[in-house]
Every structure is written in structure tokens, then in C-alpha cells.
Length: 220
Image (cartoon, rainbow, N blue to C red; front, side, top):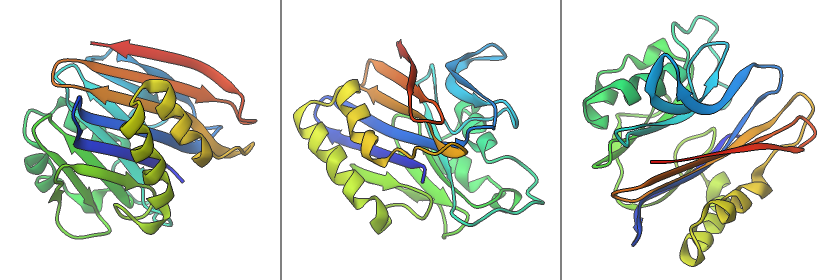
């Protein structure tokens, strides 16, 4: 299960805090988080098959992330779900404007989170209209937002934010949800911490046997 834990305006020092696991087939090629040479304003990992991303930020402070909806795979989908993130990071409109302008039927089942620093929105093409989210703590897996399956993960996330909202403690929060499997498992964990003037982004990769790989860190 992919997992995104997110605190929006729910901490006195942070406007946005995100901790996320990306679960995917190990055979699907991907590049580690970096600023993209062809889109230098975007910082994200990259799916080298469809050229999109599962989670990223822009130098402007915009953030977006996507998860698949469990069991939803339409072979005729016109576009990759990773394009939803890329297009928002390059877009100049609000999250609400962006989501309302999408054609959700063009994609396989998805959940999309998008934030421009002023508003945080969520939508799924397995639910109703896009929704603006109030300040709070949220969890997203491969069902709808705040499904019961993510409640234990949200509780760990909340506890870490109450004590020490740092990069390493948040990586620790994600560890119990990691999947170790030779074919399909947790490929990387990502932590994003954003105040009104500073953004920290860290990604840690994992091998098929769960071995910890490289950790890359960015701050701007």
C-alpha cells in the first residue's frame, strides 16, 4: 500500500509536513529525487517509464502527490497518473482551479493531493468533487482519504509531530508500513518539512530485500 501522511497547518512551526512511502514493482525503472534537467523548477523522483512522478515540489513551494486507487487499472487510460503531479507543479493556478479543470476519466483510479502554500486540496476519480481540506492531519493510502486502514499510521505520525518533527523521526514513522518483497515493495520513503520560509526534502531508497540505499537531501 502506498502511504501519504500529511499535516496541513497543524504544527506551530510547519505549514506542511509530509511523510510518504512509495510502493511499486522493483522492475519499473525510476530515478531518485533530484531537480529535473528538463524542468529545473521541479524536485521529485521520476518514473522513467511514463516520465511523471508520484510526489514532488516546485521551487515556488507548490506540492503534489498521487496514489493509485486499489483495484483500479484501466488499460485504455489516456494518460499516466504521474502526469497529474507534474502538471500541477508547473501550473500557476490554485489547487481547486487545477482539479476542477481536469478530465478525471482520462486516468486510471487515483487520489491526488495538491497544495500551493495557501490551500490544500484532495480529489479522487473514485469519489465526488474535489475538496478543500481544513488544517489538520490526514492519511492517504490506496483507498479514499482517511480510510480506516491508515488510522494507525496517522497516530504514529501525530505522535512524532508532537515530540520532534524532524526528518529521521518521520522516516521512523514510515518504517512499520514498509513492504519488503522481491517483486513489489517499498521503493522509497520521502519526508517534506515546509515552514513559511524554508523547505526541507529528503528521500531514502530501499532495495528488493529491504536494504537501505541512498538518502538524498535538499533544502531551499
